[in-house]
Image 1 (cartoon, one colour):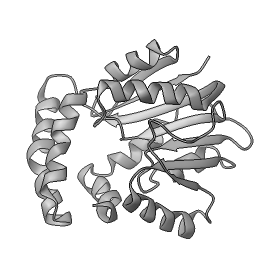
Image 2 (cartoon, rainbow, N blue to C red):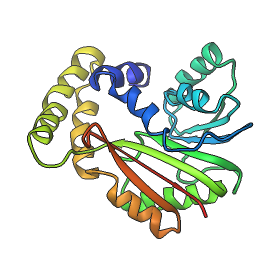
Image 3 (tube, rainbow, N blue to C red):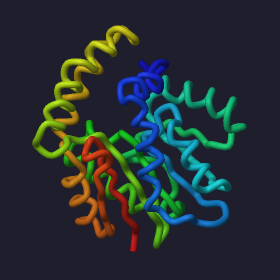
Length: 220
């Protein structure tokens, strides 16, 4: 699945996954200098172009526990980014990264499969990694408010995306699970409350009428 992951994300979201990755960074300030960034659950490095566009001198450390994803990310790192990104194979919920060392922590589309207990671990890990005054930003697909858009969106997730996954990646099951995870996650409200309970300042906003949700904050 890793080899087709990035292209399938772009195809099944009609390109919105690319747009949302750019948009959810917009609320973060234009920090100067060598901004230290921890990109959790980095996948194939889809966030990197947006990180370097926002902070050209960023020092990015990217984590993922999937060897397949990291192999694809390493090729992108070598071919496109001149090995500027440090890749680390690790669990983002219990990472080996040093405490209070990062100006920014990001994660794109890695939350929907996490339980409440895992979201709590992620909140604590984010707080541990950030410097005082540091920023975090997360984005995840979500359910729009009840109405015609929600009905259409959920139909697409449940019935059409698995067919696209089968036709283009010969993988029906993984794409079938997307609607289940999205329905279970719903939106970032619960995740935001968990982060608030850990003492982090949090705001969140809907993207494209709630088809995705970004939430952001700072460590006091």
